[in-house]
Image (cartoon, one colour):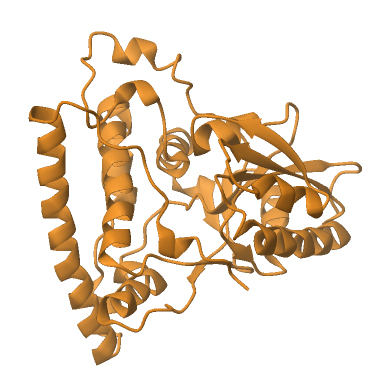
Length: 322
């Protein structure tokens, strides 16, 4: 059983998620009830409203979940949900649903394995709603994790972490001293993607054994299904990886060793002929994404007079999960 009276903050960062938040909170409530019964803990859920302009708050309040207000992106929303003295926090996106046993599995690992800094469940992409070849190729890629060799990384969709810490924009000041403001990376906006920074820092400070994927539970999510959605997702991750390399060069080594995704020939060899064909489609589309990214980066760095637009939601990943 967990320690008597142990309260675990459950922080859901939401940016205009009125369509997806209801099923997410319902699944988290069911998983929380099971974890509380089995593990003797209590979850304290909160939805942090990240510059929301829709009915996200009403969805949370209809389910009796308190809300907080934040501004400046997902990382700042997570920061707003921190609770001093908590043994660890569980952070969740608002456009997922979880299997019933997921939170109990996270609690057991965080309780029984003090060497683990971060625990996360397996990610399971839902079948694509579109039937075209690229949608099916993206599904195969996500379902099989790119047929990659084992790597130590974790997803920001749902995770438990003992010591969440991401530098504020002010704290980045010394690292940015003397840097010019460019229109592409926009260094002054601070950290944008939580799991990129946190994964690297946990690996740098504690080694690969500090990140663990639990054996039970699952996070169900909608993956991109269009070329536009695929590019937007790629652009976000590529930009943040490059920003991390520049802002925190001391983390490049752990990323090269543990974070780089490389295709495992043995895993790919066990795939069906159709899966291999679709993976080939994915790789061809990725060549296009890389080329467009290089052109877009060059445009904003050397020719454009205005900064690139802020991140927009990937529409096909935001449909509600029933």
